[in-house]
Length: 244
Image (cartoon, rainbow, N blue to C red; front, top):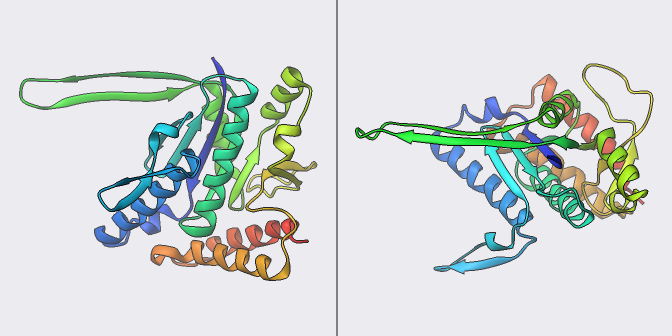
C-alpha cells in the first residue's frame, strides 16, 4: 500500500560507537527521547518522578534500526500527511539542534511489513521485522546522498500531493525551496527541505541556531574530520534561508 515514509540517518555514527558504553547509552537515551517526544506531539506523562513522552498520543509508525530512523503513515490521507510533516519536522529540528546531526528524505510509495519469529525450547530465537518496498529503497538512497544535515522532500511526495489534493499548502507551511547539495551530482532545480526552525529568524536567534548545529556535529566526542566539516559547512549555509 502506498504511504508517506521518512528515513533519517545519524551522521558520524561510526565515530560515536568508539565511545565508552556509558556515553553511547547516554547518547541513545537522548536520541530516543527526542524521537518519542516528537512523535507524541510534545505530550508527556509522569512515570515515578520522571516525565516521559506519552506514547499513547502517537499515530505514526516508527522503527529505529542501528543508525536509521524510519517513520511512516498507515493511510495516504491529508490528516496523516500533516502529522507526518509535523513529526518529521520536529525530529529533524530536535536532533539536529539538540542531540545528533541527521540527514533524511521524505518519500511516497509502497510500504509493507513482514514479521514473524520462533523461539525453541532452549530459549534461542529467530525474529523478523522487515519494512519493504521501493519507497524505502528510494528514501535510503536519497537520504544517504545528501551532502548536509536536514530532510529533503522527494518528487514522489510533490506528485502525490498534486495528484490527490491539487495543492502543496500542507507542505509549504513547514518547508522551503533550496538548491540541495548532493554527493553524487549537482541538481538543476530547487527542492523542498523541511525547515530546521521557524522562518524569519532575527540575528540572535540565527546565531543560536548555528551554534546549536555546530554543537550537535561534535557532540558525544565525534571528531570534526574534513568530511564532517564539509557537511557542517553545507548545513550552516542552508540555515541562512531561515534568516529574516
